[in-house]
Image (cartoon, rainbow, N blue to C red; front, top):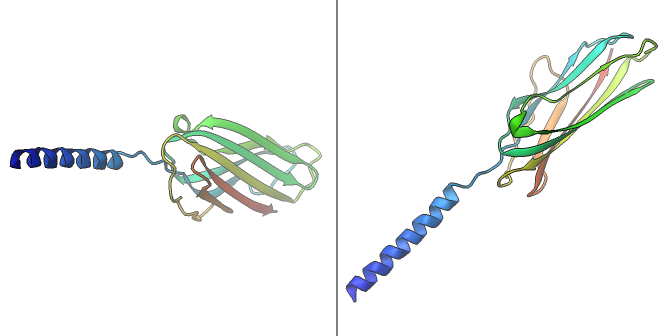
Length: 160
């Protein structure tokens, strides 16, 4: 009887160890953290080429698709850009670039940025905090929206 008990106890210990190992090996996604917008140039003139970049201070991991959406609304025109990437293959900072028309007369731009990240592993339970870095503008916050995807949103109004 003692030998049977030892075998059962050994099997139970192996089963518990196997279940614990599975739990420890769990792959959890990580959302990127953003530090703000890099805006070049800061004063816009007709004909200028403008680039606005959402700068990441920490990169995400185990993220499949990233769906980026940009809108830059000026006094007399709006620039938009929507695009998708496989995030784990392209972790570069998202951006929008455009050339101002020759008749551009604005002195303000309302910048709006959002992104949805599709998870390729277990959903994260938290996201990096938004931070502010010198030379960058605005605030972009990241959040795990559901068990399937996470989001980031930010905006800034540039006056010159």
